[in-house]
Length: 148
Image (cartoon, rainbow, N blue to C red; front, side, top):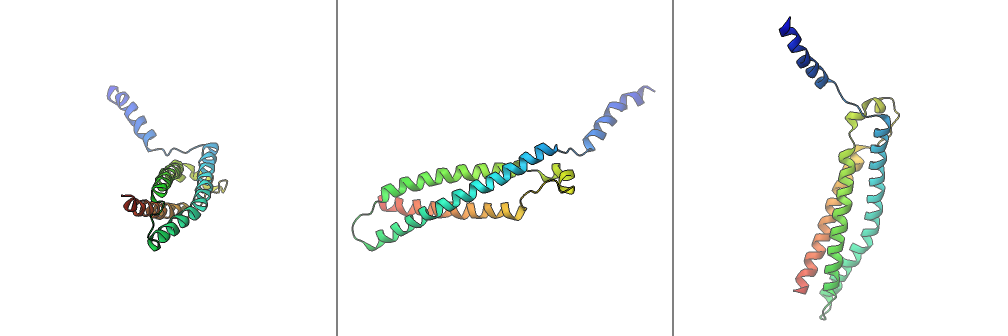
């Protein structure tokens, strides 16, 4: 009888380890709200960044056309500020996606009580953020070559 009693805690541990863990409805709502907020914030950020990037590339074209020195130092500083802001926005977006765990919210998803964004939507934001980071890096690099 003693060996069977000794195995009881082990059996309980194995049983509990195999159980799926689900989040509460409130926790799932918070995750969805966080993700939707990150999408809104990222959209706003990208919409505001596009004109500034266009202005930077126009300035580069102007610098190529004229023999005078252009204001490359100012654009290097602006570009570095864009890089920092971009890293911050991307990190917050990635964290919101990381915290969203649909597997832990299956009961609420199956009951249609949650409406999370489509995964293709937030995956597309990662692509756009990566492309935008490349454009910012190119802008900074090309202006840095002019400075010195």
